[in-house]
Image 1 (cartoon, rainbow, N blue to C red):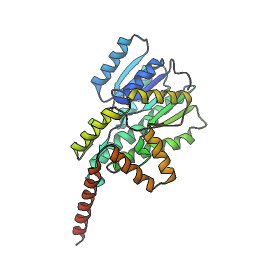
Image 2: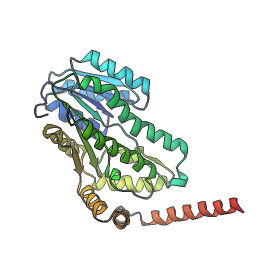
Image 3: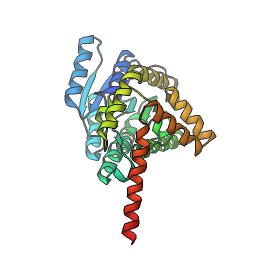
Image 4: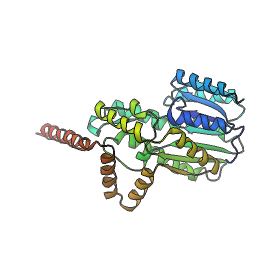
Amino acid sequence: MRHLDGRTAVVTGAANGIGRALAVALHRKGCHLALVDVDSPGLTALRNQFEVGGLHRRITTHVADVGDRQSMRALADEVAGAHDAIHLLINNAGIGHEAAFPQTSLDDWERLLRVNVWGVIHGCHFFMPHLAKVDRAHIVNMSSLFGLIGMPGQSAYSTTKFAIRGLSESLWEELRATTVGLTVVHPAAVATGIMTRTTGDDPELLARVARWYEQHAIAPERAAARIVHAIERGTPRLLIGPETGLADRLKRWMPVVGNKLFSDLVIRVLDVEDMRATRSEQWRQTMVEGRKGRE
């Protein structure tokens, strides 16, 4: 989709982070916007920012829970009623969780799957009929570095992001003969503030990782610029950050050993070496309790 001026883009998770930066970048390209989030004040602040900017684009805000089927069905109808056409769907909304598998409750699993997986499925399902009506359309699905490689403490989050990778790669083939393109994005560390909103069983660990993000992660505007360029060029797969390129190569060259090497590297870079020992002890306790249960 080489020409974005006058196109309409739906952006979920638009109130913060990459979603907000994408909204700004697409607005500058001349897009009309349908901004979606559960954060109503954040959406209002973003819309006010655009009104101050003075560019005359149609901008609508929509409070919707991407994980809720009825909410997303209503959202698609609402956006279609407010805009002449829908050309871009950015499935960006997502949440994080950091804990070993035994410390991840089924409620945690359900919450992540609901937002990170069902949110993308709902977006594709309910907006696809509208995307099919225009001459050229495009979908962006946000996976992650952890949709390329598994890390300790990320079993639930990685599951959701690997799912988005699998969905997107299947849709590449299914959409090949259509007028709808698709980009799956694998960002590494982006300073979106996600770590301050990530849940988990170790608040101190999360705080340490959040501080690292503040100092070293790339700005969301840089990630957004890469994504917009990928939309314009029709790039099917976008890796953001040198870490993603390294992880991708290691998994192809050394699927098992490379996983451990990369995990060890990330743990050292984040300065959370004690985390692996903590996770190992948690698993040891889990196994001990399991053996006691069999006695």
